[in-house]
Length: 145
Image (cartoon, rainbow, N blue to C red):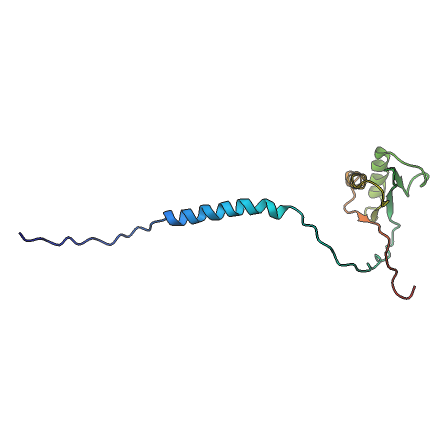
């Protein structure tokens, strides 16, 4: 009996199962690490004396928040009288319609709740303020003063 050798043809298909396994493992790794990248990390920032903002041609609109969370505007009426949220939105919107380039600043007391400052910024945004700056005091005056 003569045996004939059967030649196997080379397989032209690629086995993709191992590649799918690797892809699924990478996807699980990214799914686990992505939420960790979204959260903030506590860091100590370097201290530096900040340069004052360049003088503007327009007087800035300043919304102050005292330690009790009361709001004060430096426009319209008395600046030493607390104003409510509706008044803030109305007055700031009027200023933004008349002078859209007016710089807007928020002064917050060091003892005020952070939420009150954020609420002040939301009110300014509702009134149409394109950007809001925060007023700080320079901890170290520049040399020569």
